[in-house]
Image (tube, rainbow, N blue to C red; front, top):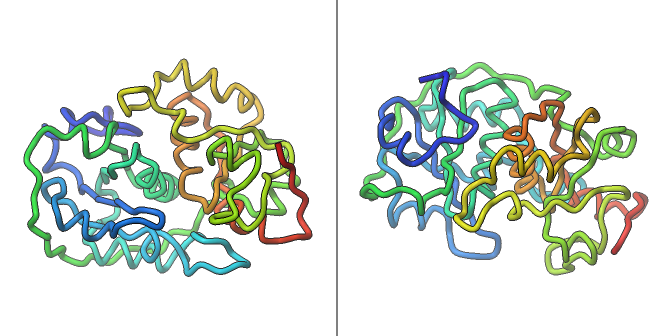
Length: 269
């Protein structure tokens, strides 16, 4: 199985390997319904649910952003509580084009755990949904440090020679949305790369050659991705991985951190 696992798998592949992976539902909605309630209403068989706000992030603050990286110990503990053993392949999904699932993918990918995203998400699944809530067997996990080359601070981003991509919508990149963003604008020199444009009309990722063209600025330079809070930026990182780029990093604080620091420059338009 390892040879054909990730970064994406199809719903057909998953149906044939459901017992071989730990399925994780990471549905979450910005200012919307509860991801937990959505999970309870029907999820993929055997799936456990992880909360982006508490399991995949540290507490929000103006200094750290809306979805700071969880500490290594907190992340290990969250996975252990859900019975996700080290080395077990993980399949992440959501119902929004992998906008949220990509966050779990990046965190696990960074520490070397086999992980994939369900291409097309919940809508691609043709089988029955379950309302049973599994009772996981907790497991002990070693605390794995976040690799320094997979994550960039605001200062490291400002000093880097890598291409920088902003995964927010083009409108937010250009003008901001003060209902969400601390101020208008974006990191100076960043390229606008809205995460949703990584997908085709069918809701699945574009072919690798199309993604290579989209992220051509990363060729030979590497890339750092950010967004509003470090979630959908992981979608761009997944797209660049599919395109064959390897020197990639996430700026976890993203604009919710960088934009809140008035001492840092910004560009608009």
